[in-house]
Length: 198
Ligand SMILES: Nc1nc2c(ncn2[C@@H]2O[C@H](COP(=O)(O)OP(=O)(O)OP(=O)(O)O)[C@@H](O)[C@H]2O)c(=O)[nH]1
Image 1 (cartoon, rainbow, N blue to C red):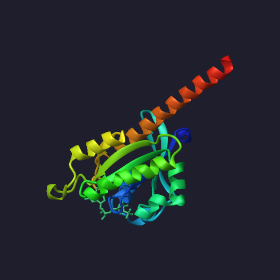
Image 2: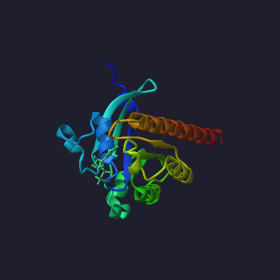
Image 3: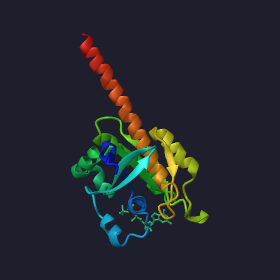
Image 4: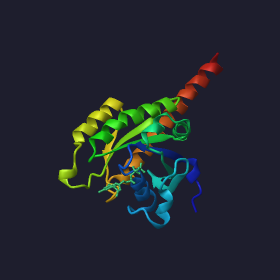
């Protein structure tokens, strides 16, 4: 039995406009279920509680906890929400491809995340609802990519409904978080080396 999951544990907060599919994304990732019912009912309406799944990414056992951060605009200036954001390791900035407004909102949510975190946060821009029919698609891939360049973070498209891209999105964010930790450990090493040489 492998017991080393908690050596690689990450908390990821989902932020974005109301009604774009954050809860369904969590349900899909944690329970492999889209319809929020039964056990998944517990996913609704939480701020601080996360929903965790054990999985293996690149051969390393991992626990990923997803937090559905309350998304009402007022929460952008809320101390309780700031505290939740501060505790998260990484962030999924989500919008829906069916809502240009939700794309615009990402900028304000990103600002809230950057304000809450002391160091530069590890971000992933995620476009949800890619399964919806062409006539419902109001935000192009190109617009998503342009915003990702502006925010200086990677970008991916998913569907919480079909599950397409969901595990890959979380996996890629975990890889970025691991790389970020290795970089800061290296920096700390250089700092200690500098101090001990003096
Ligand atoms: N077709 C399709 N519908 C989706 C998808 N994701 C979410 N939805 C629908 O969008 C609606 C809102 O989904 P939620 O997961 O509750 O959205 P939310 O962002 O958590 O909403 P708040 O809790 O208000 O912040 C639901 O009716 C879902 O069925 C998706 O990938 N594809």
